[in-house]
Amino acid sequence: MIFKKILLAFLYLPVIIFAQETNYPEDVKRVISNLEEKMEDVSNPIIATYLGSEFGDYFYFLFKDIDEKIYDFAYGDNDLGDIPFGDNDALTNSDLVGKKFIIYWEWKPSSFHCCEGRMNLYKANFPSILKIKYANK
Image 1 (tube, rainbow, N blue to C red):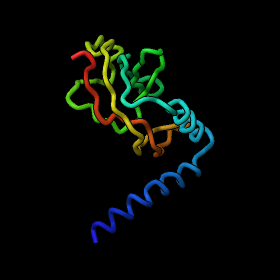
Image 2: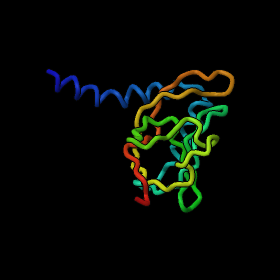
Image 3: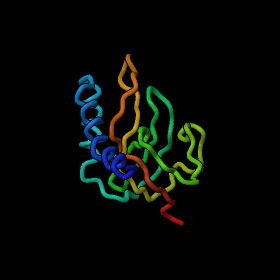
Image 4: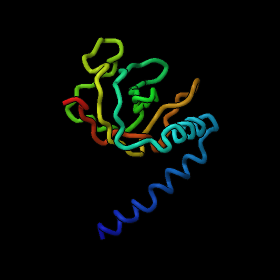
């Protein structure tokens, strides 16, 4: 019985999330679509330098790869292990800023606030860190 419930959840959860996304306002759909395009064909894992995190108009959790491509995992359902990332590393001169990391990621359902003026809470699949480790250790 439990197996059937779990199986149904895996079958219907993507449908429910997709159905919710199709009813979202156009600016929210655009944010999701832009992120999907940006992450299309991105390698896994990513080797990237940590640029820092900070709160501005939104939260940012930024990394840059060797080709200068920027990745923002701010809205992901991230597992950061025991690496002590903070909420304002870009502003606090964190020792982590400038370090290289190996990032294993996948798309996972996550909540995010959007968009200018409203800042309502929505749910969509976002790039999420499954595992992260130092590249030079």
